[in-house]
Amino acid sequence: MSRGPQRFRQGDLERALRGATKAGVAVARVEIEDGRIVLITAGADDKPSAAEGEKEQNPWHE
Image 1 (cartoon, rainbow, N blue to C red):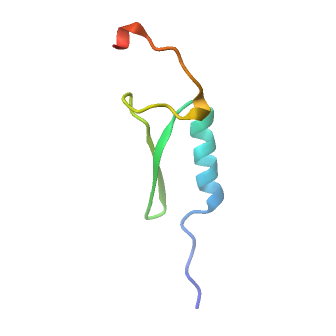
Image 2: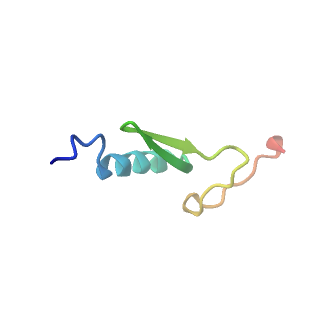
Image 3: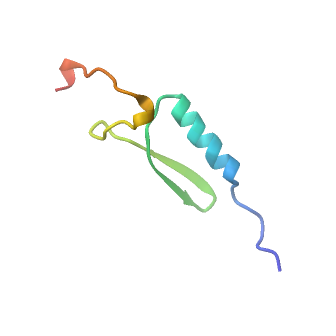
């Protein structure tokens, strides 16, 4: 008995994460439902990931 068609593959998730990282977007969480891959980005209050490195804070955002 087969499991049915795959809704997504590991490569699909890897491409989505690589694209977000290359665009400079910090991903806080990934949700996979009904074959959809949703990347939840880190908000302004969240700390950027170590991969992004340290960025200088803008004094206007305080």
